[in-house]
Amino acid sequence: MKKNLLLALAAMLASVSLAYANPGTADAAGMKLAQKETAPAKDAATTKSEGTKGALMDINSATEKELDTLPGIGEARAKAIIKNRPYKGKDELVQKKIIPQNVYDGIKDKIIAKQK
Image (spheres, one colour):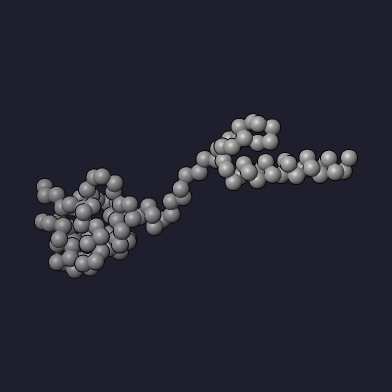
C-alpha cells in the first residue's frame, strides 16, 4: 500500500516538474496544461533606450519627460535642452555644449529640430 502511494506521488511530482520544464505539455492524466504566458520585463534602462519608436522627437517642442526618455538624456540635460531653445539644427546641441558628442551620436537618429 505504501509502495503504491509513493509511486503515485512520484508520478504526480514528475508530471508537475515536466509541466514547468515544458509549458504546454500534457500531464500524467493526458490533460493539456496551460502554457505559461510571460512578457519580457522592461526595466528603466530598456525603456529609456527605446526613446521614441518610429517618430522623431522635436527638440524644440518636446517636454522634459519626453526628452528624458532619450538615451543619455537625464533630467538635467532635458532642462538644459529646453532652456537653450530654439535650435536651428539638432547638431546645435553639441555646438552649444549642451550634450557631449557621444550622447549626440546615440540620439541623432531619434531627434529633429523643427522650425516654426
